[in-house]
Length: 205
Ligand code: ITT
Image (cartoon, rainbow, N blue to C red; front, top):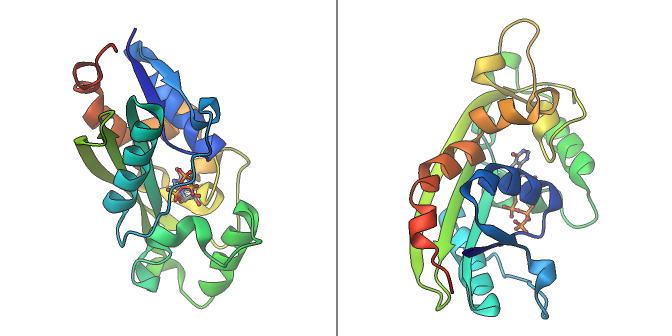
């Protein structure tokens, strides 16, 4: 069976990737199975660049095929911030909840009709020598609530309402079951776009 390494240290993101990749019949491995730390430097200006940094580093460390995801929330009223800095928004010391509350605070003056945003997900697949084999970027459009709602998902999910659930009552990603989030999400769209090609790209070694 061919092996694919998943280049993320975020356990909840990893769980989403693993459940969507499961039907492909690949053996999935994660950075904690390496003998060395997986500590990529995400210094690129865009999602695609950071996804490539992560996939390339893991492929080389593992001497195997690797897939990585770089993603984030782009808020229109903030000219696309926090964007590539979504995981670091508000500085070190904040957890997911702290970052989300900090974002709500910054958005307090923004009226409901102007709270549009999208999630973006860049995926990159690299070969054992670090060559890029495939890359894709997808997005999911929505709006942001004024208070967190729902316990599911991770990150900014409790304030993000995808367009498809904007009705009354609106539903955030954190209120949707996993299959529904996967169907609508930036990550789900990107993975589906890669899925058909993946088993061909990732060969037995
Ligand atoms: P890795 O780099 O190890 O993959 P990370 O969490 O730092 O983990 P990113 O640099 O790609 O990953 O930052 C993604 C951040 O964007 C993530 O921490 C969340 O805050 C946010 N995010 C991305 N996808 C999301 C989703 O589906 N739901 C909620 N928040 C999401």
